[in-house]
Length: 251
Image 1 (cartoon, helix red, strand yellow):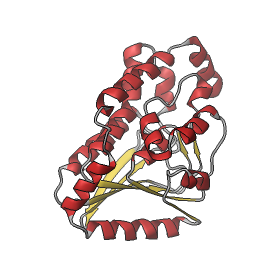
Image 2: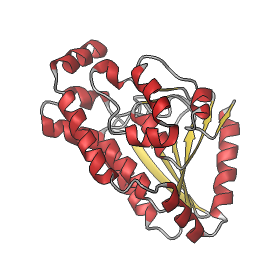
Image 3: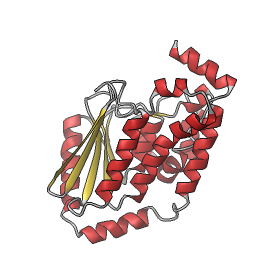
């Protein structure tokens, strides 16, 4: 459990993918790799018509990538591979033939916002505030930017990115298109996620596959684009500015 966990449960043509990490549901590299592999496998599973993505506990939805691994980066290749973690997950979600419902019960930071944006339909609670804090430590949300821009628009992405120390409320995120609906309680959220998944799973699976293709039209270049973005972040994380910022943040 110290390295996190990832479980997949399939019932009635609905796959529920649930992740956990004791550090606010953040992702070490190996857990990101497992998540990407899971989406790739579910994409080919004919018994699955729709996927629910969720995290455990009632706290944060996802605090992004592992801070300990970020601090430990010492060369460009390590930096590139670190930032490829979320790039590979986002591309796996994009290429997955099954629609993905995001269940966001709490705060999302950095890569966690990218995960929510890469879902095809996202539901949240009032506690699901979001923040892109990357600029404040000398890097930027380059890898997740295409997913966030696609879902929320450039203006909202700019506001999130440039105001890197401020939280935006779940209702702000709904207004900008990240969340479809915001609920007061987790129980209400879970009920609606279940109802939506049951409805989608009852539809013609071939129609669902075709609508997924349309939803992700004009993103075919992301396989190459996100690799380039990972290289940018991998370079910046080695800068003296970022190293000092990370040490200050760690203390």
